[in-house]
Length: 555
Image 1 (tube, rainbow, N blue to C red):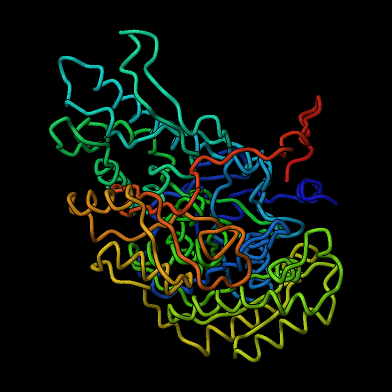
Image 2 (cartoon, rainbow, N blue to C red; image 1 turned 180 degrees about the horizontal axis):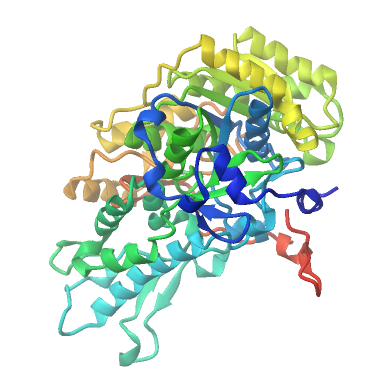
């Protein structure tokens, strides 16, 4: 069966029953129908957080063949529950851009899905809509102030760094001109759109500890400069109050369930290639407050989501992960070993071995944080024993734990061996977590530690614009902010064509954006865009709905 057929055949439990499993009574829930609910932030208990175990699931560099990191996260949590480890899975919300584009939904797959799958992949509880509206309210206030004669802040339109956002892949909106049509329509200026997942409001929501912190961070958003070079922030426009009102419900984590009834907290949805790539701090803390074990994931490969999870989120929120699971597939390893997409189903242990340096670099990177590592192969029916044996032998040679799983086809039962290996890892190998760089390092030092030590670059090259941006960051007193690199997900480098483990390359920084509200700076590498485009054949073309409301083609 397809993912959607499997999801539709599952019998969902009332969300009140799922809440009882994590010690939450029905009167504490804010219900969104029978199977979705929001959790109040008052349930976060820092005493319980310190006693719970946090497991991060990441992956090797992604390929067109797919790795199934979210599916493994869900399946692992189900497997842990099957062996008596009381576990909750904490994930990000899907963005409509990929759902209708090339990647599809982000609710897992097969017998390791979160439900109700269609709702989660579409509008869910309206969090993305609220983020989009709050973001664009600031856009409207900026342009209104530029137009105003009586209450003008004297904003120089040429310096406005704040774009609009929309939760859809639409390359035509990357660069636009607003304010055309005459005096009554505003002041013409260049502008553009980012996808909602790249919005600073999304980043702020994901890093805020409560509603008050959310409002303060929104006030700190950098907008641009006045004509006399004075910096302007959202608080100067008195925007933070109204923007926070729009987010008063979106700040609360969402509770749903997996196909096997494991509690699933899903909240926030930043991409990892253009944003920080992890769910909200409050969602992770909610999971740790209500379960002794929490499985969470970070987007794309360990060079992106995992690094940002560890260097940004964990440092900000004082979280200390206990272990990291790195997901790989035989197909992906063969792709990194030079095989073409149309030959990945053919058994080729030699190609697997050629692709292992990519896995090796990700293992080394995670171990550099002082974290215990477990490698798992997300198994496909086309995987041969010789190919799996090549990965197992490699991990043994590196003294790294290894286990296969089949969570798509078997759900939690396909991850019990992985769960047992993880339990032993946590018990025998303590976490010695430390960040990659110090916040007090200069921006250039932080960028170069990341590019040279983590990505493996020989040098970092800054464009003239990037050099200007670094000076502006220093002038604004933002040198202590962490780095949120925007780069290709297809390679550890900044060049998507460099597969495997690239070496001897230069890393190119085109420009650096400021996210003062979120509390990080965003170096943009190469040709990375923060508004994706649709593929030649969008997934939307294969979707339909019948007269009874039954959806097909969604995955």
